[in-house]
Length: 150
Image 1 (cartoon, rainbow, N blue to C red):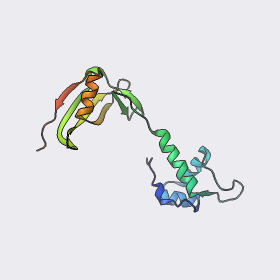
Image 2: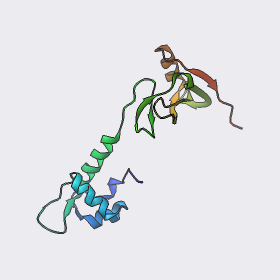
Image 3: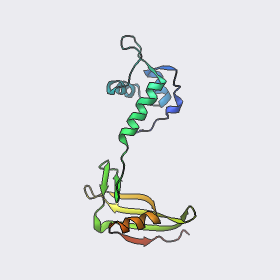
Image 4: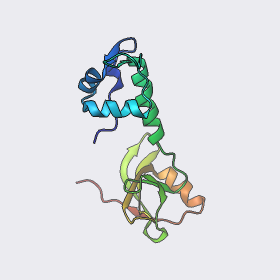
């Protein structure tokens, strides 16, 4: 299921029918009709076929994308099953620091855990400096060094 559509394919000052939008974004025409029911504004409700300005289509899709974003707090992961920010079970939380560099001073790290609600495995890309900040703020976690890449 595609959630990020390439809105740059739509010209802002051009008007598109539902069928044209469906072809450009590679979605089913019923999907575009569903977007209309969800609040996509058409140029004129009385004329058929419905026409949508490219700028309105871009605005609508960017609004949908923004509504799906979740900001994470300290020690939180995004759980793909719950579709919410969640904390990990405390005894299953650990950091894995690799030998790969991030810039000049940091190393790549992965924060791993298990969702406290559904039990799904959680992974968060991070750096060794952020791991130290988490430890300083009181989040209990084990640190494991990754095996060097062979």
